Image 1 (spheres, helix red, strand yellow):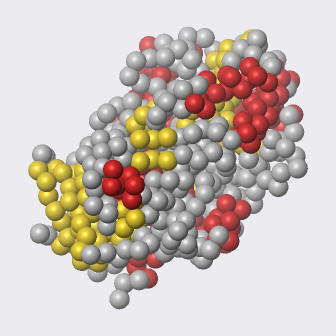
Image 2 (tube, one colour; image 1 turned 135 degrees about the vertical axis):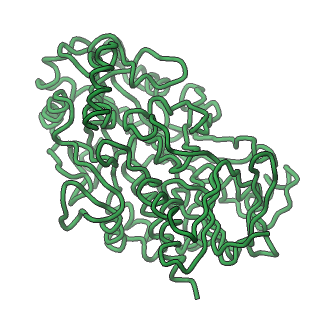
Image 3 (spheres, one colour; image 1 turned 90 degrees about the vertical axis):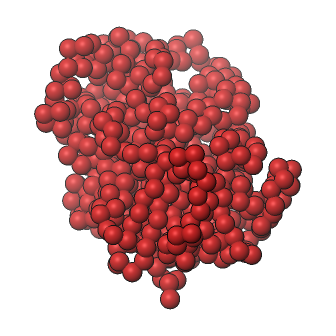
Length: 538
């Protein structure tokens, strides 16, 4: 059996960073096991191409949550990246670190080293921000972050004006001194191409002789000797293979795959494992529990002015933006669909924002089979104002169904299962309508398409957002970090409680969700986690 110093399971947002940092000195050999294939695909590299990857089984796990009573019994689509770069290769690229208070709460819960001030140097070190360096932003790091201020659709300026008329301040940098307000999102691109974690971290690492990446390699089991993890069993090309870790096994499979692999390997709730005839290596009821996710909804409008619909839908428009992208690496195809957004409080007495806004200068009301119709939007001038909750109190779980590693786990989101989550979303959708009613927007709105002007009562608004809401793809906390083994899966150094030679380094370790998109914090977790691993090497 071949031995490497470290085995990293998963090449996604965190795993790519872990592999890069552990291999940088040349001291250690690193094997990365990726269940998916290559990221060298046109619609992966082209930023707005992620509509094409949204359901594509070649690059996407295409998970489905269980029918959710909180979402009118809808079974939500949960895309997850199944390729080099993981979900950073198919996401919307918005770069939001999270709020200072999020990380300070992690530290206050007994996780030393995870406060905002302690993490800020790492955030700055990994970034190469096109907006330039200041006390918050970094330049010269591996990950390029693009300032889109001069590239967004003209309608975006109207959205920003309307939000200010509704009482929100203009915020030039959501990763700066404060999150609150509205502004233009920074995104992870370089020269018009997606800047995934793979492009920034793993691809450079793969040029080193001490790094090996195995694709189409599905990890099926962690190998233990007693309570120590010593290797991984995986499936590749129809064969079962095993490989040994001389120092540590590191799970970076994300919030679905990391708890799944632990459970398959005998680490998890004893009742679950016993019922599936899986020998218990270490019992821990927290593995797969405490699932937290952001849930969002769009309000869609028909406009009196042209939107991106008029460019992206007709064949001549597709040709135009396609040529602009291929020749100049610019135009709508080089951006995220979320041009702008913001953060606000549904109650002024709150200490900080609890809701996130998104502005999209096009609309996709009419479905298209097999893809998210970003590149084939509606035939009329449409645009959307979306929002999602930042720190919902609802909790779900992710648990395996069987001992077969190819069987997808049960994803129980339990969205809107608390009155607090329902109340704040009700207040939030009313605020979206307030923005749309401000002069800067109202004068160019023909009509509200979804949910439509007939939906006005609280009961109808609640029924609507239960029916139309869905995940915004930020699941976390299924292997949560904490000092108490009775309440957490990993300790503050990301070592799995009760076991040796095994860590989890990805978004599943978040003690609680963060305020905003989770990709930046996932990449940061990879950076911080790798530093902890290196500190512990004798």
